[in-house]
Image (cartoon, rainbow, N blue to C red):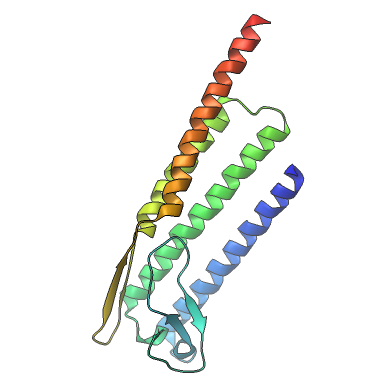
Length: 182
């Protein structure tokens, strides 16, 4: 099971890097030419929440579509930065999970490293919650949207990681007590 967890973590990292590189290529190319950005759109505007921007390739115009070429340069930079933050958070979380899995595999489950890892995961969860709480959209035309939400997923992740850090801390205390008796 731990072997497959490690492989799945590696796949998730590769897919996230590939998707961010693709998004970066699409948005950066829209700064130089509108040839392709007229066919890339935001479906249903923007929504807050953890995750990447909802970009889709289109071949038609509908009322709910905001074409990438109509966005301001600042808005395109915001998409890149927001997606970069989410990509970095996901990769850092996966790398920390790999470290925890490695420690469990080597039977060093209850040690200070795992306690620190879970606290670090909680901090990443709070950062993810902050960036997930809002999103906005401004375009060259006369429209703008702001969307706020309560990001229950990242908040629950951060709280669960804090709880796990305390559980692992208690496990370390019990292990230290056991080792001092023997």
